[in-house]
Image (cartoon, rainbow, N blue to C red):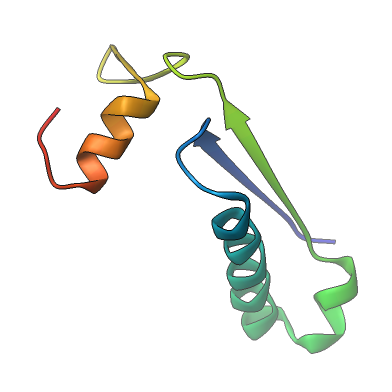
Length: 74
């Protein structure tokens, strides 16, 4: 039973976007393992509190991710 885990910083993605992540990642996994595995393919989306995620020793916030998505260097 495959388990796909996705961690995101809170309040970056809408509920609709998170649902799309679940659908597309499940579809990608099923494309590899076969359609019969769809009913047992789990996908968990977890949100991490803003500032509780770090890259290169620096905390990353919701605002930082939104700036990166807009093409602004953080």
